[in-house]
Image (cartoon, rainbow, N blue to C red; front, side, top):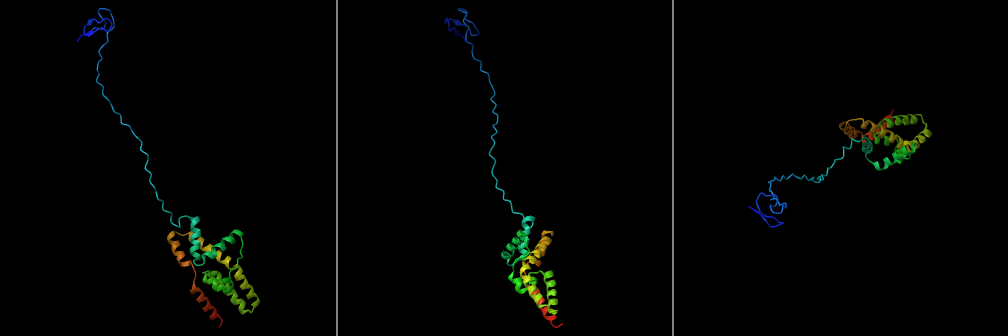
Length: 201
């Protein structure tokens, strides 16, 4: 296929690079080269999906700091709202006196009712001895002492029970709390029966 020189208009051969008439450089045909188009995959980072994880609270007895209070509450049982603030105040002030009317009026019977068996029995034996010896003024002093020291003795007893429970496995602790928490009317009845029996001795 022939082509025409753009400079002089002379007809040229197909393969000519320069015009034979004027020497003008002729335009070369564009060679079409097949190229392979490679499509590279584009990696788009998706925004991570938000997954809400619900963490169950640990077992009540797995955290010693929280559990000590929980065990303490359960061991007290009834009137927790009365005794816990009393205990916390005495511990904060490092005090051992806090008036308790139930302890004042019922003395050792109140102690046994609150499952303070060791304190109750020991003080009951002392009071029985004082009564046998006829030391009635000392008896009155003891009654006032019950009112002043009742909460302190109860706090010490509950703290000892709490510490003992916290050193147990959860299963043992649960059984211990069920057995040693709350109050005991049976203990009070037994105490009064013993008191009545000793009157005849």
